[in-house]
Image: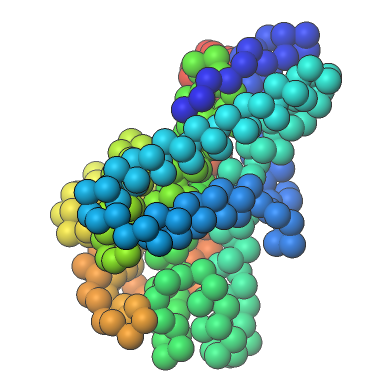
Length: 335
């Protein structure tokens, strides 16, 4: 990932400034989030990825050449993304340190999807509370890849909880992890968070094992798996500790999560399932094709709207815990 610049010596020490930026970004995401009508940086990243993929596929290069093109796609996307963020912050710094602070905070907040995740869940739960199952199915279809037209209420709730628990890692906790890591290395937290966000976007767009992504997306999927591995395991430990049953959560994750083809999403979903006493996984349909997802956790109780709310609250507590640990790691105050 691209290096940041030494931030804002004129205003405060680099450590205090970095801590202030990350805390301000977290507060901004909590209070405002990503306005749905605004252009999001991830959309711009996605346009570039989509255009490149179409250009490569039009040339019918073959499997080996597409794999090489996939490596180029990864490096190009990450370097372009981090380079643009670094450049914008550098220009703002030359204008005034306060502009750089504001820019860094806004950019970093756009990498944290906590409020967006809560909004998505609520948009599905609200019509369910009114008994409007067709509307809940329609709303859910905007957030998940599975077919939703025939889902009953329990399956809708399972889909919501799986989305909340999977995206807790790559949408909320991992960007925060890399923001803190960048800050601890004396670099820009926004640049590091955007580096991870670029890889996560690549994986969500092209990191599939099915055509036409099989060869072009392999490098994106492998890199995302590697970058998410540590934040995901740290999330499992955090969820276990906050739930009051760390050994049980870890045992269930070690038993069930490896059955999932993804090295990270199974762990992320399973730790929530174990801590909440529910079971995730089962039969899903994607464009008419039925796929069996391995069961994760024990069905000690049914998945209800209250359980989804508990999962959202658990993510929030994990986020606040990592904010505090980040302050300790940055040396703002002693642990």
